[in-house]
Length: 307
Image (tube, rainbow, N blue to C red; front, side, top):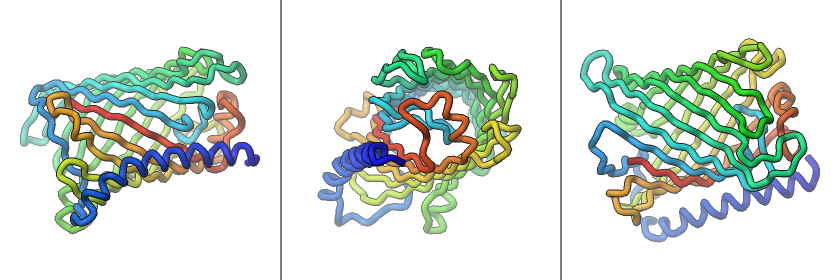
């Protein structure tokens, strides 16, 4: 890594850590004498209907997707929205059934031409699927994702995703431990412009614990861990391992927002992403701002609302 790239990465990470510190310090001053809780608190939500809305606006220092660098220049914003409708709830084998639709975008301020088009609207994903609640706090999500690129830098791709998740909060709490919340995601490309439909497997955990209790502003620390595996030459080479990501994330509810406007949360964190040679090579044709490093440091600040 050149000294310029190293200094650029350190400035990004330092800036995010400073923002995270500003989030945490006021809460520490009011809650330092409180005992720590085990798991993240559930925010009060006045919406008792069958329709749920989730909105998020993220700022990231770099856009790295499944271990492959996409953007690392300028300001990068990634707004998203998801609407979920409850169809069914029961104590039977099928505990619940929801349908959902979402849209996700990546927009950057840097519009300089080069490896990428000069359009700031880089990517839009459209998602539609079904979520099934299963016994023992398992859930299975089945959904289709349409990846589109208004900038014209990458050809559209669609895939079928299956995600099995386990909410171990109650089990781990009874054992005096913090929740791990493991999941497994399996993706099958349905259409690829290169005619090489690949398959992708991701295994992840998101341990979390309330490090500082407060009636209004509890601070939660999470350590998201992800491992991406490329099947059927997903990364274009022979290597199965694509990347490993380890992060630190701090979040806090925004209790100053009246509850009738939904549950708001501020999140800040940093991820260290270790990518394989195949993943870096696959990213080379579309990466903006230079080649991908062995380790990419990605900072994030996110404003989230759920109603």
